[in-house]
Length: 386
Image 1 (cartoon, rainbow, N blue to C red):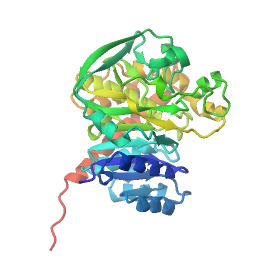
Image 2 (cartoon, rainbow, N blue to C red; image 1 turned 90 degrees about the horizontal axis):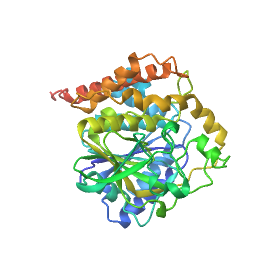
Image 3 (cartoon, one colour; image 1 turned 45 degrees about the horizontal axis):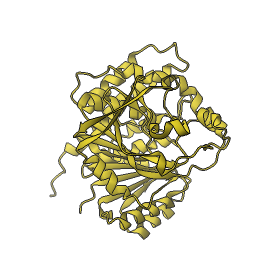
Image 4 (spheres, rainbow, N blue to C red; image 1 turned 90 degrees about the vertical axis):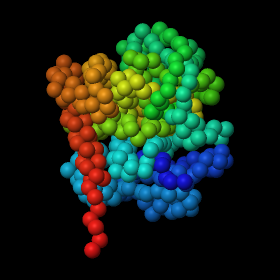
């Protein structure tokens, strides 16, 4: 079978976790020949060992440290856009999106974080692919705050809200219904063990090691669901599958390497943009299984807080700014451009670090231009041999 799935893994230390995902695929008879794995790493990492791991597993793939990424930009004539992927940031997953866009054979993408493991009982790749192909009735969730807590199913017991969920939207009234869906474009698997929380919530949970005292289990997840049209949700890139078509509206935002020191919201904000695009275009984001085991390494909660605090106020308002953008658009790029305009042209001086919104809008424009350049390169016919 042709390689139609690009698996993007940002990693600097625990790349061996991928062996468990490959074992899971073999155990559930998922065809590993469909996968092309892209390990996104740094110059100080042992890329030879990473390549050896892929070869030992018999899985196709490539390893891109900072130097190899720059070479790739130059080879694809997009060096002028290399800034859209920040260095030494989790948002380097955007490189994987560019790589997919430049290779038309990839119809599907996966994001997997290197501090996760699949559950043996779940067909990890197979279940995500089933979710992307799903058509039928599914639980639909909404709230009076226009936000859905992806951990809502047992929230009365654990009281958790995920990283990126606005504080103003807490204590919401949840309503559930049944909805017929027929165009799923992203599948978000959730997580057992260490929940994906922000630093403020981790501190409130009494944990100084960047994890959480409250842990999640399979029993906390009762079934799959979608967020209703008009409601937003947090999208975490640690366990995620998506269709190629969403890439124009799924840019992982330029975090960490900016003058405002805003970080840790790259996947969260990309999820807000994607949900807005889905609502405009009549698409859905599927949530629930397959679960992964999140084994976040201990680290200072206060370090995470330092990285997050510059963007906390902005996170409260981002969704309000783009909530009406692109309503007449008929493409992901069209919706994304409309959201870029709202951010780029607005006056956000009333917020702490409000100018970062203008910065993000500029980078969103550059993202679309970069994709156009890659697409133009694909359309140029190869020179005939003499």
